[in-house]
Length: 282
Length: 282
Image (tube, rainbow over all chains, first blue to last red; front, side, top):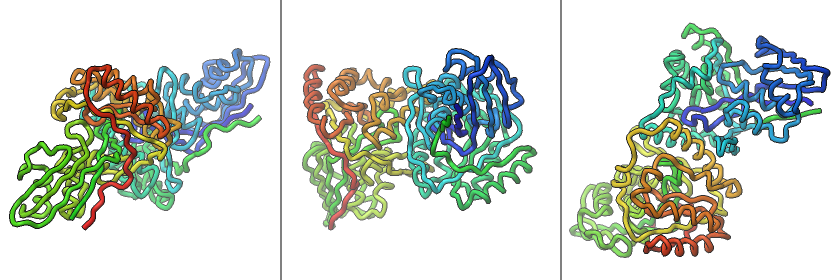
């Protein structure tokens, strides 16, 4: 069976571990019976070992119960950049292996319910862990919105980004993020109400900034170029600009310039949201 | 001029200082020119001094620039119970005094932008303070929802409730509330998706429980009786049950029984949401 799942951008500023949006950039996984495990990969992530340790192989074997499988992975999703590549891969592999609930499998394997839910369901997602399982709900997403992602070539390990977070935070900062998250959910439902204030955050971005100091300039520069709001994408280092469809090209051009100006190499992607989530075909 | 504003229930579990819903229980304020300040009050809060220290008098004098006013206040909103009585009064007084932006005045005077915004705009509100001013947005609220509020006779000062909060909280608890708040916003937009999980909270209710230990029994008992979810209303001691219209009567009966069983006196209100916010008439 074949399955395709979209990339996702999580956190979106205040919505740390709670919000994600699916983006039209895909990984496709094919799983077929074989005499013994064969993994072949193309595109992004194809430098990873194509053997039993590959995430797609582990997920498919777990779903099916054995690993006498031929698995093909074709991915457009840059790895280790905060675009949910492993959650998308896990969801697509689970679906291609015939899992009844690819979201549950993907969230369990990847550990990020919001990325897995966006890849499985599409659109804008509120998600969290409840009783050790993913709980996810769709939220309204204004179809006038478009996304620009500045993707630096350097990777930033999620583990390292997680270790940068403090054990405790001021109560006022927790409240700050709740207040901004409400404004953000309203703004994502109606772009006319979305402002840069809505993606302000005090729970992760400021703590991670030393790992990727150029983020400050990128976040501000993309707003200056016309983005409605900007945030780190997942744990970075990609930076997400939330735009109207009409301004996305201008913001993308500014993104390329900002990469140059901050001494980075990388790519700038203009992406529509994905509203479909994981899709299977036999 | 005459103005009427609805009560509100803030926080709603995870949405500490960030969410509020307007409830169809009202305060009405009339402001007219007079030779010198006269304040007369009826209903809830009429035991407070009817003089220049009255909130309605202070707000009206501030808006108009002098206090040669005859002010009448008629309120159905119990005071000091977590139903936003002072925010509603401030918004109504500001509107009755001719303020162009009663929300801004009410939020500044009362200090709770989410209560003031619910009283000013009606419906379900996401609000917070941005640059010392209230920022507020409407969020979708399922018209099938109804509210039951258990209102103990005892008051709980907001100041005392605020002092019970810790200076800092575990980072994981801040994330916990963000995750629940996303689920709650989805559930309030569609009652079929609302579960008791969505109003779980780790930022205020657990810390305030020693001030009102009966809350635990009320919160759980109202869910047992059929409420979709329950939370403290504002800083308490009122407890809010979010219900479908069909189950509200049953939940209200259970609320009365729970008051008895926990040794409390008080009242149980069945309230529709208010969708209008502050209304003025000359």
